[in-house]
Image (cartoon, one colour):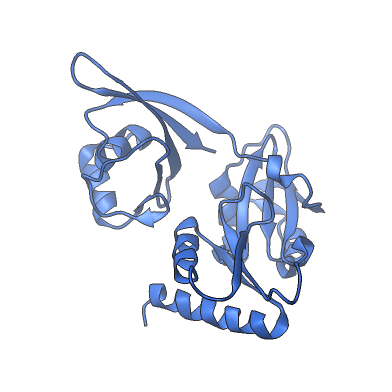
Length: 247
């Protein structure tokens, strides 16, 4: 059975468990997986919600609840950790994620990682909070300090984007990819054909796919960007765009 076919089966098991016990929650899902689950349970008699520990979460857990059971407590489903380092050091989202993976932590056990000035905040499964706080002492060669913090107020934390402007011949995926990541057309085509490119959290193998304002692009191992604005067309027929680069 393919991985994509396992998701509905896993969610069915959780829903059945919620009927018996009152509440059951998945691990963290990508936005694409969340859409799939929402569509799958649209007409099923079970209460389904998506929660990532704060209101603006991108990666969330699917929470199934029995209406007769009541509401769940966020603190039972999430732990928030703050990772801090010296002002003279520089770390990014990929650095933090890589250090977690090096500890043997699976991606679906960690939710959003929000970068701040000289620190990062991450949400994880409660059973992992103590382990990460104890074991994560370095990110690469940079020493870090990890402490547990309250979930309250996390909704206000949003990752900053650095903005750059450029022009493209069209809003095709390959054209925007070149502008966003400084790639040649040949290299962009290679990444797309190899399945390394996601558009709005879903793998896209179509170089000619048209993008629009708000489209999210990521290239495995290179990071992710957002098409913030599509502007006017130049005299030479090129489209002005603004791209937000995630830290």
